[in-house]
Image (cartoon, rainbow, N blue to C red; front, side, top):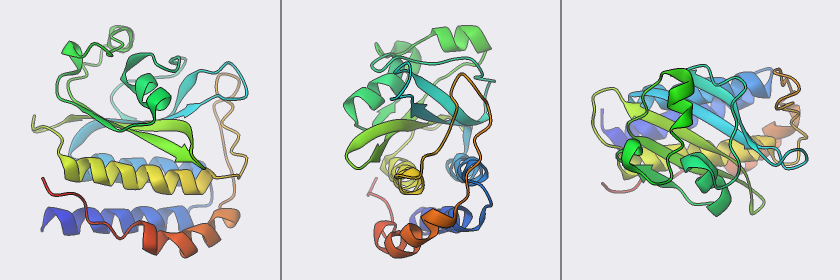
Length: 202
C-alpha cells in the first residue's frame, strides 16, 4: 500500500476512535497505539503540561518502551520539554548525541532511546503538551510523512481536549476519564477539512 494512502487511512481511524470511544483516555491511548504501529515504532508517549499546578510536563499515556510513572520534565528540559517550550516539531536522528537529550529517563527505566519524532500539542495557540514517537523497529530514520502523521494526531488530540476540562490529575491521580459527547461536534465539523493532508513529500 502507498505510504501516503496508508497514513491518511490511519488519520481517519484516529478520527473514528475519538468519536466512538466512551472516554477520552481510551481514545487517546488507542490513537497513540495506531500511530506507533503505523510508523513501525517501539514506543510513543503523550505528554501534558500542568499549567495550573507545578508547571511541569507529565507523561499521561504511553505505548511500549518503559513505565514512565512518576517521571516529569520542566519546560525546556529534554527534547519533549524543548518542543513544549518552543512549540515546534522536531526529528532527532540520534538522541544520545543531541544536546537537548535528558538521559536520566533512560537511566531510570533501562530503555534505550535512539531516534524520535516529537510534535507539540497546540490548543488555541497555547502549547498544552507534546507527542513523542520513539525508535523505528527496522532502524530507519523518521521522514516528513511520519512527522505529518504525528502532527495530525496532535491536531486531533488538541481538538478533543480543547476547552473540555480534561482532568489528568498529573502527580495526584493516575486516572482521567471524560465523556466524548462534547468533542463529537468539533470532530464532525473540523475533522474532514483538518485531516485531508496526505503528508509531505520525503
